[in-house]
Amino acid sequence: MRPATHVSASGKSSLSPPPPKTCIARLVTRVSTSGATILIIAISSCAAFLPRVSIIQAAFQRPGVAEAEFERDVRTTVRRFLYGLSGDAPPSERWHPILPDPQASPLNSAGNSTSLPSWLSETDIDLYTAEFARTGFRGGLNWYRNIDRNWELLAAYSGASIPQPTLFLWGDQDPTLEVAGMSRWIERMQQFVPNLRQTALSGCGHWIQQERAQEVNAAILAFLQRL
Image 1 (cartoon, rainbow, N blue to C red):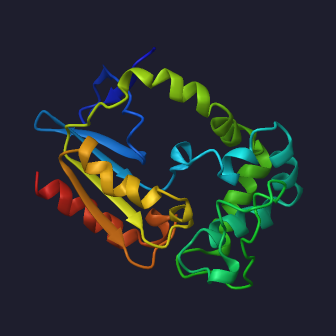
Image 2 (cartoon, one colour; image 1 turned 60 degrees about the vertical axis):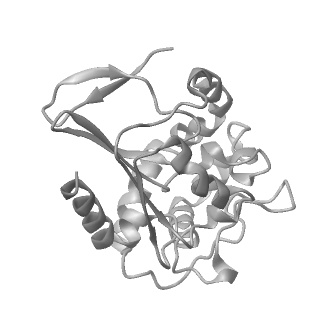
Image 3 (cartoon, one colour; image 1 turned 90 degrees about the horizontal axis):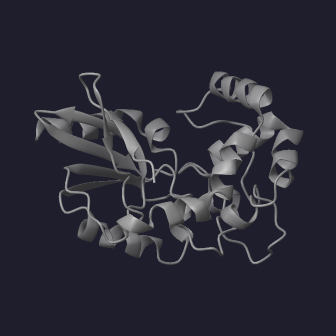
């Protein structure tokens, strides 16, 4: 297995193993200061750790199907995902990771509000729409299709711990928390990340850096200052 490349704040790179599969959060940034590596992680993307009943995995496995649906109207897809997974969407317009119908659309109940939350503008939608219209969605979707292989490659790190000081930020209204056992994974995280500090953002959904930009920045700076 090829180890990951770690780039320190000084710009020097070194080799380090990938995080263990027991870590249920996406790496947002990794920096070095005073000789210590610091991981800052967030629950912005945790699909790799959802049970196989999750529609987000099942719906994306067949190449071309999700692409066709998402690319039929890129702007609507972007708008619905950003809004439907946010803490601003009411229950009737929230996106859900699990539905009883295996043939349900990945967009399922995600709303398409006529007005956007304060943290999201039409200019933002324009940018995302232009980029996904240019690239398509296949590159991102292929990550989900490689989940089994990624899991196998990380098998050697099963049960390993992350000793570095770590900050975990998550929104308490993230729809992925609907997955059975997800809250328990968060509770157990300290077993594998002993130097963990957690901050739950009240009323925030999946897109924490956008929905709560000032709070996220403040939490990261406070975390770094305490090291």
